[in-house]
Amino acid sequence: METQIKNKTPLEIGKRVLIEERNALSKTVEAIDENFNKAVELILNTKGKVVVTGMGKSGLVGKKIAATLASTGTPSFFLHPAEAIHGDLGMISKEDVILAISNSGETPELLAIIPTIKRWGNRVISITNNPSSTLAMESDIHLYLNIEKEACPLNLAPTSSSTATLALGDALAITLLEMRGFTAEDFAKFHPGGSLGKKLMRASEIMHKGDELPVVYPETELKETVIIMSEKGFGTALVVDNNHKLTGIITDGDLRRFIKKGGSIDKSKTEEAMTKNPKVINKDVLVVEALEIMERFNITVLPVVEENKPVGLIHLHDILKSGVI
Figure (cartoon, rainbow, N blue to C red):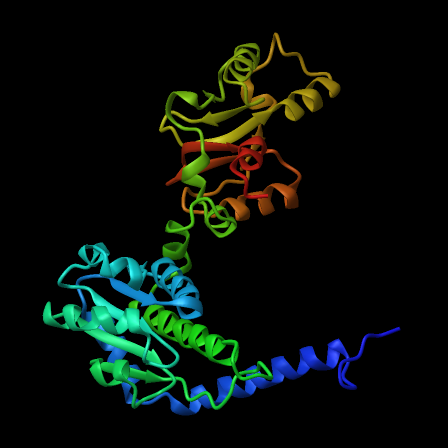
């Protein structure tokens, strides 16, 4: 039997909370004004970092905002105001911009460090739900949340206000991202171990090159090519002309088909068994695109070329080891 509280089911309560927080976000959207432009401009022009600070739930939200800023091209870190009072203010440099978060705008730990920060000449952006608060008045730029009430029925637990603060932080970060022309490739640089970083990996990052490449010529005796294929360990060889341009490729599969047709490994040249005009890629192709080509044409190796000269080789095993899939 479904639990009910004051004639309301858990589902109804949950939906109410989400609806109230959605409505609260609409109020924050209404409150965004020219100060948002000023905040973005200030951060864009700073040579330092964005130092995010806040206590309690505001601090937890601030940590996420700092992380989002840092991962989207705006150097940032979180500073705990209570720790700042006891020495961590030394983490702030004179070029840094402070982003101070307090729903009430009267958080004692924040108000304790603001005078010192301002005396050093650092600019302060604040996010509060009280434009008349001490923090708002002491800030260079104030961003107003405009939240009328929390989703908490007691109007005590930070819910709508913390959601709005987080969303406003996202708005700042993404606006800065777009203003900087920050790309997916830039994002991947900060996430080399993440799934996005792997998906944006280029062929040049995993290809075999130099002396690793199994290179032969069309006139190379097929039995010698087989030895080179075995020694290099790819089960394939790249066939080039005298100008080192790729003319073909020979794989274990080509050898099997050649023998099945009556060909002799001992009495033949490489050109008799090779596949002409093989599928190739350039070094800037995404690894995931290379994989798509392999799957589409049912092949396990791809030569990497520049001006039709082989500069690398990718095997399906290299893609598997890269973690892209």
